[in-house]
Structure formats: structure tokens, C-alpha cells
Image (cartoon, rainbow, N blue to C red; front, side, top):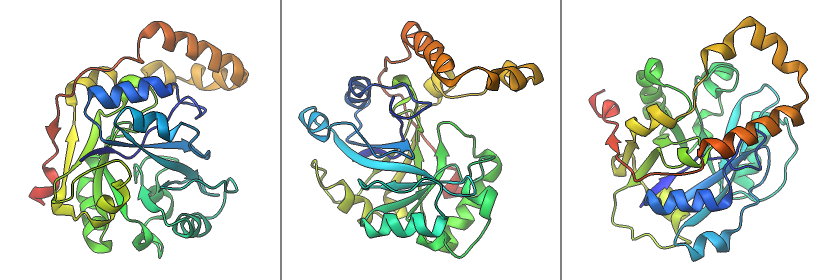
Length: 264
């Protein structure tokens, strides 16, 4: 079973992928199940449409805590108040019998570990991203491995895609005796042990099409000027750029296995 547990569609304020583009990417890249985790929004894509195309849609949500940290809930469908405490968010995910994923742990501004460090809620998480398509974990690999072992969190690889071409650039293969069929991904994920998980990266395409901050975006002029532009204007310009860039198109996978965690 090949799964990508962190993705955004055009329903996220910074996402562009259409439902069709996500499905096409899954078919081209052999993704069996994909989680759509909009920013503080429930998944609005159609489960049956994915099912007809041989892909399981995992409804998720990337919650933002009152301190700005991101927490992903998998298999959640209920609305919830924006900016709640991490305790309330985790409780809400568990109430829905969902799974809790810690994305990009030390990412500035939104990483759980960068904001809360080791607190009493870490052992409530089920998964932690060792590989994230939009954030390099190279400085924190050993720390993520340590956290994983100490609190029994299973490490995964996720795309954190915002464009169709980024879907499945990072994925997790589950190698165990369970046979995947649409509808049983939760049971497979719950039963999987770390030794069953193979963390995959398409390094070539990630380098070419992955998310990155351009040099001009960190300039003082850009940081001062861009916030002054109304959101709908910025969004419209980005949609035009997305349309002409062909960033909605995907290519077959050329995965490398991320082995660093096995060497610790």
C-alpha cells in the first residue's frame, strides 16, 4: 500500500490542485490512498469520485492551534473551531476516532516542536513526519528519530503538496501482510509498525517541482510590499500563473528510499 498523508487542494487558501489533478497524480504515481488535509477546513472532495478511480480518499484537516502550530487529523469530517488549544484539537481528533499526525515538526512558525518542544501531549500523536515535501528535516533527523522512539510515534514521508505536480513526491509504502482495498486504509495504518514503513522520496522531481521559497520572497521590499496587496488579487495572479505553468501535471514516480533513520 502506497499512501501520501499530507496534501492540500484548491480549497486551502494556498493550494491550487483540483480534484481531477489529484486523482490523475495518484493514478500516475500509483498512490493507493491519499489524505487531503486542508488548512482549518474539512475535506470537500468527493470520496466516490476517488473510489471510482481506484484511490481511497482519506478525509483530513490541518488544524492551527492558538499558538500557530499545525496538527493534522486523519479520518476526520466534523467542523471545529479555528485556533483552539492543542489539547482541544487532539481531543477532537480522538473523539472522531481519527489518527494524529505531527507535520514538519521544527518548521519555523508552524512546527509543533518549534513552538511547544517536548510537552505532555506528544504521546497522543500516532505519526510524525520525518520527510516533508515542503520542509527540509535534515538538521533535525536525529531529533525526530529520538522523539519517534521515545514516544512511540511512527515516522512517515508526506508530500505536503499544494500543486498537482507535487502530489506523491514524498510517500510512505506500507509493507506488511495486509491487503489494501478501498475502505481499509485506517485499519492498515493503525496496525502498521515502523519496520513496515518505507519512506520514499522522488528527489529529482522534488528538486524540480517541490515547494521552495524564492530569494526575492525573503527580500525586505517583498516582505513589506506584498502584505499590502489584497488577498483576492494575489490569489488571482497566482491562479493565472498556475494555469500557464502546467504545474497541475504529474509524471511517473522515480522513488528513492530514505534510509537515514535506519542508521541511527
